[in-house]
Each structure stands twice: as C-alpha cells, then as structure tokens.
Amino acid sequence: MILSLMEQYSERLNDIFQALADPTRRAVLGRLRRGPASIGELAEPFAITLPSFMKHIHLLEESGWITSRKEGRVRTCVIQKKALAAADAWLATQRAVWEARTDRLEQFVAGGGKPAGAGRTARKKETRT
Image (cartoon, one colour):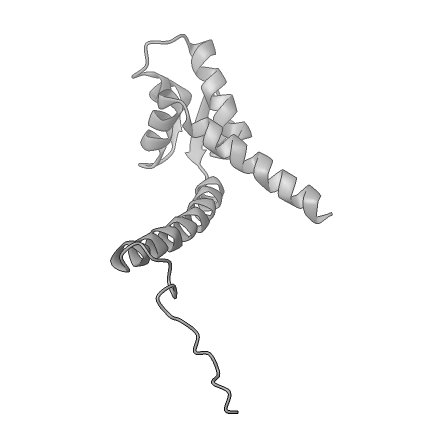
C-alpha cells in the first residue's frame, strides 16, 4: 500500500516536472500567473499551429498545472496551485538534504580536511599494579 502511494507520488512529480521541461509550457504558466486566459490569448505569442499548441495545453492539464473550462466558444485556462505545492515540497526536501551536505563539507574544510571528531583520541585507562 505505501509503495503504491510512493509510486503514485513519484509519477505525479514526474508529470509535474516533465511539463516544466518545455519553454512553451513554462511561458504559458508564466502568463497564467497574471490570471485566467483564453486558449487564443495563450497561443498568440507562439509561432506554432493551434493543434500543436493544444498538445501543450493538454499536457499541462494532465500534469495538474492548469484546468480549463469552456464557456460558449471560448476555452479559458486557469493555473492550479496544487502542482506548484507538490513541486515546492519536493524541492524543499532536496534543498534540506543538500544544505546538510554542504554544512558537513564546510565543517570538513574548516577542520583541515579531517572528518568531524577525528582529532579526538580516546584516553586509555591506566591500570595500577
């Protein structure tokens, strides 16, 4: 059960970051930060066909970055914060790991290349006879 949840979480993160891999999709998300926009408004700055642009929109929807709704003949897209929260949580975990590693490296360098605690020697008990 837990492994299944981890796999689902991992798959979701893969989808979230895969969506960010393309500059067109990042630009669409950048535009949507300012508020909802129609497909036409979003597609306008790009020199690609509408069917090609729609593939980007579908991938952003499938990955959870955006939702769209149709009102009459106009489809409007809205950014979703859940994908950003999931990416941010993963990045925060990674940041904590790497900060701990760089802290240990800093201690290692400051200690003259000796691991923490390496300069200490244990006292041997003297036995009296």
